[in-house]
Image (cartoon, rainbow, N blue to C red):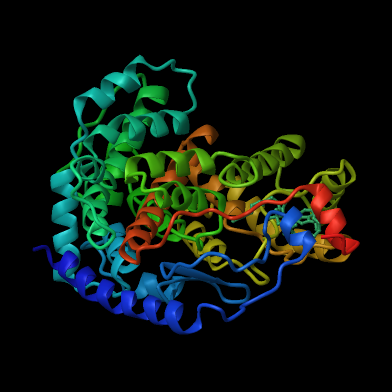
Length: 434
Ligand code: CMX
């Protein structure tokens, strides 16, 4: 048995006992109230999901399995000569909760390499799609097309699945699917933007390194890929894409159906699309002035945006109440490699000025730049067009979402099925008529 599976088996037993204990002894304990504002307002602030994969502390930022961004970047094993850790190591951490040894991560790298070959029919499907199709639509189609490979679905059809063993079939699907995602993404990129001149995979390279190689982008983009996929791999399970993947899997749909749904969930401008919006805002400013703005010019541009009734993209957060460590980490990367890039210079100038405007003239709860403020500037520095950004985000979320649904089956979580009410019922509730 694979070492990672043996470790998972041990951990699954321990966590199952914990969940059983909680349900049996404390199932009736209340952990919160629910207001009409929350019901109408997208369930904001309601603690109604459970995941151990990551936790978003409003003041400290994201912790992956308890580790901060800095700890993850420091502790996870790295490829020789690289500054950023293996994405395979992040996968191991999210799956098992442990920082892998060199040997443990080597096993995952080897399995991923063995499993990354994409079936030829996927390329035929992609080739036959209109070139105008959005790249994230192409990725979702590719993942859906591979559903016929699902070991989980096959075992279910053969009556082999029980609540207890379901996670083991899910594990097979996760290992088969995840390594193919960056391969398909790079193929879509070259198909759409590089005259379909494909670059074959490099069997010596890891998940992030091989992705950069197949994209045809030179160093240090391999390290930025590793970094970006780690930083965006998970952000609790309430965000639209993670929640969608979880919900679809809760009905025992396999990993292919579930991830394809999550990819669609990421597409909206209020979620994965914000990276694009932030880049556009900086580009418009640069185009308008044709130089790095002075403080007064930048303030005026902020006012133009706010007076037009728009938000300034790339600032604020629904949960975080402090600086986003994912922004800060990318900023450090930019300072090292993008120091002469005008858009990057603008990101830095804006960092010093925009939060003050937002803090004093809006009711914003967190005026600091978020992760999407800077990612697009770095992607675009490496020549990647805006409409491909969500595919890069999709590769990242695949690591966390697939870890989440593996644990959903391991801990035997039931189908998701909240109740809904009508507006009339809410009104009557207020006047005590229910
Ligand atoms: N520019 C201008 N005003 C802003 C603002 C911004 N970037 N962010 C928040 N505000 C305003 C809100 O519109 C709201 O105004 P009203 O009181 O008039 O309705 C007020 O400040 C309070 O908002 P909030 O409670 O601080 O923020 P929300 O939880 O409602 O929204 C978010 C969070 C991210 C949607 C919002 O900050 C925003 O629209 N930011 C810009 C888009 C963006 O960068 N999205 C990426 C988010 C990153 C992520 O989710 O990971």
